[in-house]
Length: 263
Image (cartoon, rainbow, N blue to C red; front, side, top):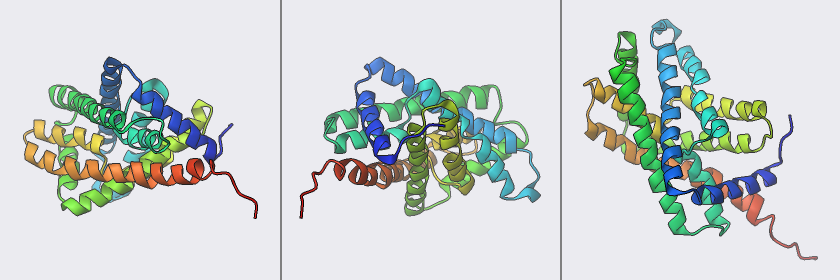
């Protein structure tokens, strides 16, 4: 399986970030909708797989759920969609490299986030609520338990957890950019995403699905949703735009572009 070295991945990521900011507005919204929906479908699969596993299995069920969740990001990267958590890395790197303006960055982040929200709510309402996939028997219990675990933290705890989440998510995308073939990209995505899900980190788009799914079931409130989404989004920004985007831009793009003076 062919792969690129980190310096080449940085170049690919920057150019990808530039391309994302040049998408026609209608395409941005449609792909953003798909991104939110794909992540939500991955989470729905997770819930349906682990919903009725024995409690005695403990954290093993988290590992099993984490093993199936990555299908969402695989669809986004390989089939094509826009996901805010990945864009927090790629678009920010394009900005650091002075390839786009701050206005272009903000425009992309705002509209992709809103489109992701619509896609997540679509899956939560129609598949989770109308079809009942998150509201039947043990699946309702699991959905509510997961949603409660997301909101049952302080602002700081949620913020720090979200940093860890998007650190891993953006590393998954970084690895996918480093592979030239489908198998390599899937392998690059799979393990970091499985890790963040098994750990239980906070992902803003995933939370846009699971908390509303509990709300549609009459088990939680929109106030709790907003209280979670704000620190989760901010932590995801730090994890993607700084822990991956800024550090890798500095090491592999900015420093590589400097001319070494002879001593």
